[in-house]
Image (tube, rainbow, N blue to C red; front, top):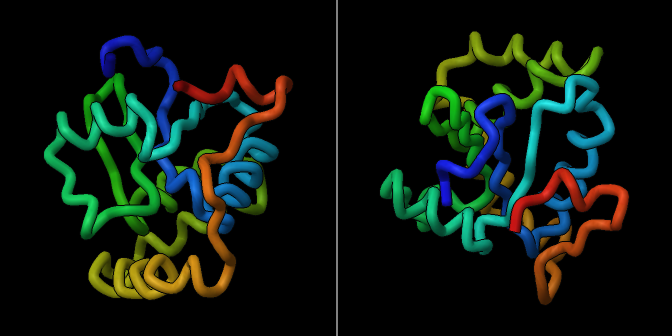
Length: 140
């Protein structure tokens, strides 16, 4: 299943029931001028395949994973968010400057927001269903 992801794309796995995550996906889609990204909920079949393939502990990483099939490499937490941001249109790509912040500090901030995301932004009962126009950007 993982091998079916186009090598010229990158896959963003996100928490499909999280309102903040769903809003972030829509933000990325709007600014992905190079059409570099595909999306799938962590709770999807492809999400579970990648989680199992890379032995990801979902108790520690449960909000965003970036998978680059060309490199067969994953990024998670703040590194995933910044890897995505640096490929988006201006001014979002300027967020890449935060790579200079040590990962320990970046991930502490990331974990704090991730831990509180349901309380601050809410949660859906089911994963987001993309509109027909966006359906091609999502993997099942």
